[in-house]
Structures are given as C-alpha cells and as structure tokens.
Length: 202
Ligand SMILES: [Zn+2]
Image 1 (cartoon, rainbow, N blue to C red):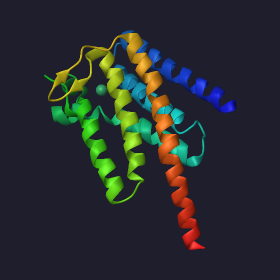
Image 2 (image 1 turned 135 degrees about the horizontal axis):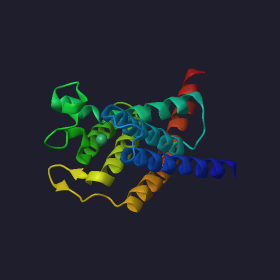
Image 3 (image 1 turned 180 degrees about the horizontal axis):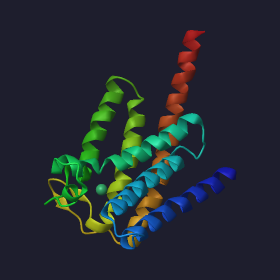
C-alpha cells in the first residue's frame, strides 16, 4: 500500500516539475537568457531524477539515490551538444544554431542502447542498467523538448510539436512502463547473480 502512495506522490511531483518548468520558461522571473536556460536545464534534471525514482520502485537506498542523481545529470547533459555544435562556451552562440544539435536526435538513443545491450551480452549484464538509465534520462529530455519542437528521428525527419496533454501523458506513463520491465526482468536477474556470486565465494 505504502509503495503505491509513494508512486502516486512521485508521479504528482514529476508532472508538477514539468508544469512549473514550462511555466517558468514562458514567464521567466527575470528576463535573463542564462536564468531561463538554467531553469530549463534544472527541470530536465529533476524530471530525469523523479522518473528514475519511479522506475527503481521509490526505495531510497544509497545506491538508488545515486542512480537518481546520475539520471538527472544525464538528462541535463543532452544540452551540451548546443555548445559543442556552436564550438563556443557563450550561451548566445549555443542558442542560435541554424539546426538542432546531434544529441537531440531520438535515433541516437536507439543507437546507444543497441551498443549497451550488445555490451551487456558480451561483457556484463550491468551494462543493461546503463541502457535503462540512459534511455530514461535522454528520452524524458527529448519528450520535454518535443513539446516545443517535436521529436527528431534523424535521418527520417521530425514530428510536429507534441501537444501539452500528450507530452505530459508520455512523461507520466514512460517511467511506469519502464519500471514494470525493469523490476520484472532486470532486477530479479541481478539479484540472482549476486546470490550466485556470494555462494561461489563461501
Ligand atoms: Zn534540449
């Protein structure tokens, strides 16, 4: 029962962060490009962190808090490509690019996931954790941006901007679907592996 209460609370916080972040983008406290960009970036981070908290069953151990923090950082890291493409540290240059920078292509998520999943088969299943974290962080960022600019599936083109309610629904449902897959398939496997390794060491 408590777990459902925590899930509902976390989902409410997730949607609230999107709404507050979007509101502050349209109605900034102060007309400052830096403050607006920082607020947007922080919102991406908070959305990523809350999404991961839902996925890992809202159990706040040292490990899961670290994962939430990492997911938030990864979600914020997408916008680094603005600076890389502009070859400049100046915000003005980063925000006046002629086209969308590469990390904003949703096809990049698919490619990176393919690499991580392959590595998980060849090297260690823990690469799958990387795939879950990466997808959650970057996809939530893409969906938030997609509300304004659509999703970009390079080289096939992009969709039209995602309407407000669809975008919030995707942000709401994505961690729940991922949580189901993560807890059903990834978590039991890793727990079994730890038990096996412990048994080998006795
Ligand atoms: Zn972005």
